[in-house]
Length: 25
Image 1 (cartoon, rainbow, N blue to C red):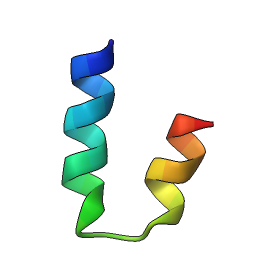
Image 2 (image 1 turned 135 degrees about the vertical axis):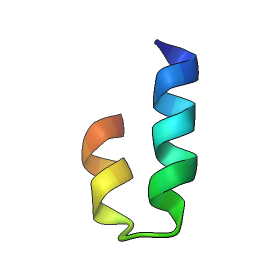
Image 3 (image 1 turned 90 degrees about the horizontal axis):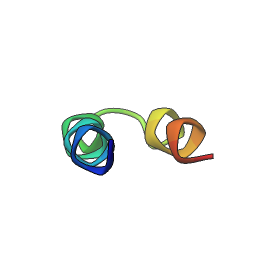
Image 4 (image 1 turned 90 degrees about the vertical axis):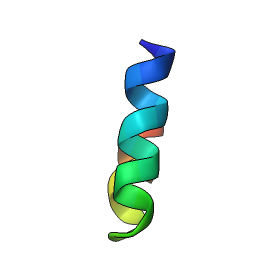
């Protein structure tokens, strides 16, 4: 799960910062 979240965060890092923030929360 951590790996999936990390990968998503990195992928969304280029995009909006709201996406990873919501996923983290």
